[in-house]
Image (cartoon, rainbow, N blue to C red; front, side, top):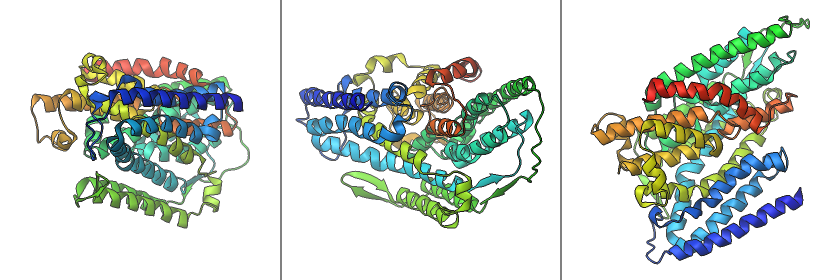
Length: 491
């Protein structure tokens, strides 16, 4: 195991040295400090570390160790990030430094702070009582999770409800389908309506998409597919329940259902208010080595951290509520480490795609024209490359293709700009958003909460399917629904 890991790390270093030479050949003689690298100057092989880290996330847990990301995710992320960052800095110097600082200050840090805040606050809310895992009860739990995911985040809703669902069905023999549909609905599709719901939508919010635009734009798509999935789940779970005898055993306990730690909703509302505030007020900006950071965004991140700390103060990490919730920092630590590498290595992909037809991916840009193309390409890549960076990539692609800038996005989405190009961007962004959020459910690596839910289920003794075993479920159930969504909404 150690030999294989060392071999992989050496390979990554070799890739980095090769990239350094190749990017130097493209040169940065005309580098200008304080601005990012022009994507037209980047070779296609500069995205190798990005592809490498994402393939590592998918493959290493299968061939090396099922707990690879828990034990080695940080090291793997650091190696791939270094394999890109070192040659990038050598080749482009000041421009490269600007790009790296920009993506961490503007995207990664706010992204992780929001996930941490929602994860922390949700971990202080505990559902107690005797739940019996009948088809009706299980369906209600999925409905509740789907309904709240857009407001507490797919991460928060998943952490809040996956353990009650598992506890309610301890007596059941067939449990895998419960977790799989939970991932479909609560960990992904339920987060379609606000930037709080799913990481890609939050990245869109950071890049100019108004907070409530997704609520109106994506609600028909979300309602349509959620209702169908809930009905399918009820049918499947009823069949499984009856096959096992259709009888709920009586263990002699009957504790009323109650929710403890509800005062954490105050802190949750504080997080929502902080996000809304950052999208409403304009308080000027501060220049950090050439990167312009808005004061309202700094205030938002500080307030989210304060809300999380207050939640920890009133529901301590070592307290009974969090212990009963089996709360730990491991899931959020894993996400933070792995995504630090993803956001670093995605820089050239974003720059090349933003260059549009002047970049190395001009062939792909030329082939993606209609909303249906954006929906399926964004969705398929979201299944394997994680939906947050994929959303950001094609968001920039759409802007580049229509020769638009981020500065006009709020005016476009609020109807202040209504030219043909502006209306086309709305169609493309809708397709990108739906594809990223919905198809993040196709694999374990499609969205951050998917792996968290899988890990919790396995800790509880549920033998979850492999990476490709899970995909069999998603291909059979989800893909036909996505085809229907295409015909109903995108043609």
